[in-house]
Length: 242
Image 1: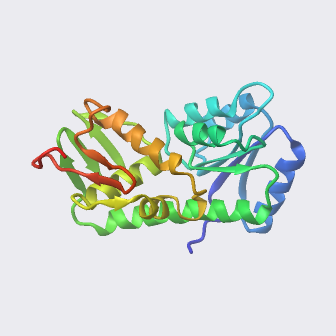
Image 2: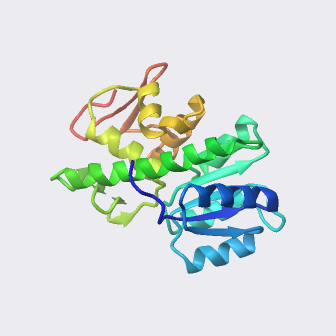
Image 3: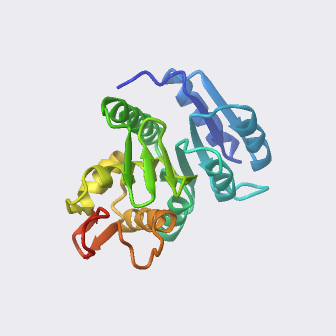
């Protein structure tokens, strides 16, 4: 595992005891660039003035919803976001992930679990960068889509398509394994790994978001095909629709 101690982490939670606990654990683990905020306004100021590498973001804040902060972050960055919330219902988890969150931890939680999730996000980010740099073909093109693996950007008809890190990783994996039916469990293990919570909805939401962003007609997708009960397959332009 790489050394992530220089990474900048922002903790946003209105419960000061939780912020202090997380800050203490991160310091004990060797992290030195830790930012804290107890409300949305202060969090946004920190975000504007610093290049944060990972967010620990509470959903219920006194002045604004953490989901709104997530939207603001996703307008400019694919930096990993881990939601912290006392709301553990499946619909809340799916909503958090669908808006751009990379992971979701329900309160109360163990500090060991939080550290595992944080390190998991940094490992995956490192793996994506390594995979991109080791491949000589830095671009993949299909239909009117261009994926630049080196910069981590996606363009449709020449325009940048905003994506989260999980969306980009899922798309890249599907395209690099085109023509192969990828089962759900395999995709979840590859993209989410340790943070996979066993909900099929998580994968379904991400596939739906990719279709909304890339397909001309998301309700009748040409590229990402669903095989009910099995998984998904990426189909190239020169293939017949299935």
